Image 1 (spheres, rainbow, N blue to C red):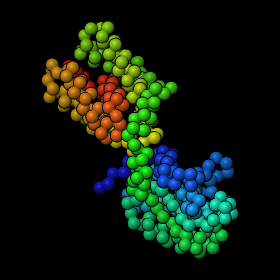
Image 2: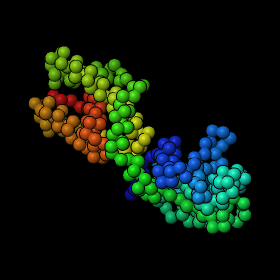
Image 3: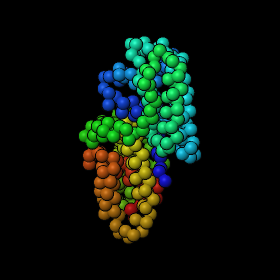
Image 4: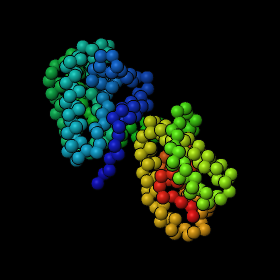
Length: 297
């Protein structure tokens, strides 16, 4: 069974437009919906391709549910070709529309492709002045943009972007009771009050920086953000067993081992450098100390 990660529709629109822009560059023009609508398209190219981006609300109940939503989107938005025939002709400076392309996160049914072909014949039959005689409707998912995805997710650019995100304004501040919980756990590992306070403050700062990094990841690389959350949840589920297996005197070494392994895992799965990954590892440790059963007895 294929597991589909839920895309927020706004995030998908942003990501899909980045993919199309990466492929076509200045030949792709986005159309704003802020002023009297967007003519039923996200953008167009000067070669006559119209693009629409769409992510159904996940989880869909079934494959049938998903393709019916895709098909419904095709039906509703291709109707707008009739309504905005003259506007689209002006956008393309008289050039005919050769393709109407729906960009979605996943295609897991041939029924969407079959419906696109059926709808193609219907639109051709309308005899619209903006439509080319060889007009076709196509549905594309992320697999159609493999090279562009790799380009946009290049590790150096990603690390640089996330490093800047860590210093962004508007930091999330952890609740005082959660910080107190963390302080009580760290006191068991660092009995000296002054050193304990310094460790707590450092972890509090790393947690806040980590929240900013994660927001930058969520907005720019939402799939990597989902991968991070999945890995973090997997590691969280083993914390108590790891503590029991480590024994009563393994506190500091367990802390270092956990930070080291998280750093390596995050760097690999997200494609970021060690410094940014280490910051996320410390965010995870602080988060677990505040709200989860992570202890270093």
